[in-house]
Length: 377
Image (cartoon, rainbow, N blue to C red; front, side):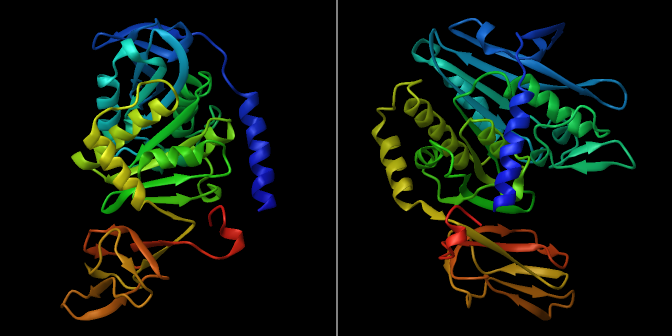
């Protein structure tokens, strides 16, 4: 633990040294009617405006730039600043639609402060229909961008440069009050409405309350260094990772829950009036009353390749004797049965029947009594 803390303190100092301080920098280009920038400074965005921009990042192998869409809603009065990111994994779509809807529906006349939304930050991954950024180097190197922040312009991989341009262009120099990074589970897997959060960061617990999530994983982020949530936290910006269901689809229920959460978040920050919709309030209170806060989870997978039949679903309460899945060989013979690692709640399932040895089939969460797990393990 001390080793991790020492790393984080040093990393925070590193981030502080590299914070960008610059006005919005325009390239002079126009794409689809919207201006192209390399740096966003929301101080010089007009008050009472909704602005669509493109952030220029790295070039592809044929010399064309990747352009990240940026939405800025700025009220007529000064106030807090909320960052909404989505699509840092190119196969995760629910958050993208959530950001689109939120930014479109903000009433600027009653907004105090600024909301910056990124509806799909991994443009390369989206082009390639992949979770990762595809580097055209050594027959394609796949990079998980959500382990690379704040990036490095001197790294040989395009992904590292891309991340650095995102960090410098938007994240680093706008003094955000809070940040939400929206995800889904990876391809073939599905999460419920789920949050990762570091409770050692002031205000983060309150952010989790406002989500009304099914599950909150208390997590220091030691296993995900370089993730957006963690780096924002280390930079002094309270942040959460909000997981909205499954990938490669638009799930209207998950999108609506993410949408409603953001407006609650804005209200809690004094940026927007709270909703008076009684049905909305009742739904949130019901979700919130059922939120499970867990500090440890564990995956269960097969030691054999084969065809997997699930017997459980997300949010099922299970014990370590609950048969969660059965693995069959190609002839339909049972070759293995899968059980949870411990008593708890199912919080992720793999829907794809064909699995190689070692692939996660289910994820189970609980509250560990180990004192070392109080802030997550």
